[in-house]
Length: 66
Image (cartoon, rainbow, N blue to C red; front, side, top):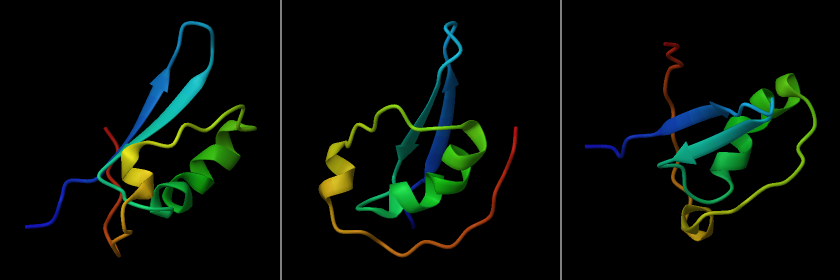
């Protein structure tokens, strides 16, 4: 069974948006969120989690909203 992959958008009261990924390893998280980042504006900062430093896996999937 494949690991669960999530991309979470967090909107703060100050009007900032955080994109948090779960289950994406290596630079895959940056690749998968690139279009969202472009659509939302400029990136002020990026925090790399321990998953970023793990070996990337190949993923294919569908997008689900809601």
